[in-house]
Amino acid sequence: MNGVDVGSLVLRVCVGFVMLAHGWNHAFRGGKLEGTGRWFESIGIRPGWLNARLATYTELLVGPMLLLGILTPLAAAGVVGTMAVAFIANHRKNGFFIFRPGEGYEYVVTLIAAAVCIGAIGGGRISLDHALDIADDLQGTGGAAIAFFAGAGGALLTLLLFWRPNRQPIS
Image (tube, rainbow, N blue to C red):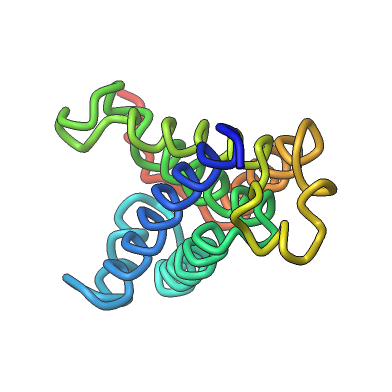
């Protein structure tokens, strides 16, 4: 095992845990899926009930996929997609720092960058991708491209279909 394998494992486990916890929080804590749906509606993503489920189920799926290192670039694409929608629809207007009112975008941009790196590095030797002998096919420039373009494409499709931000009247 080399440094890249260790780095992949640490990065996958950290980002996978964050995504699983995020999805778990949406599904089972606070306002649950209904509250998450209302929040989506409040930021202009409609219908909120549907998008709350799509985002939550994506997070609950890609978290364990990253933890296990299975189809790693596709799992990373799920992170890119959900965080890109969060960036555009909610965080970008609030500035960089997450402690700013409304929460800035440092968190979501960091997760996007980490996910693209995970796609490039691949699952490493400590992954199901390696155990299934598909790790070499799912890393490098191709893995990064899958993570970035599939994630960005999913985000773009979501925003085009469902994002209807509340616009301020021009005075």
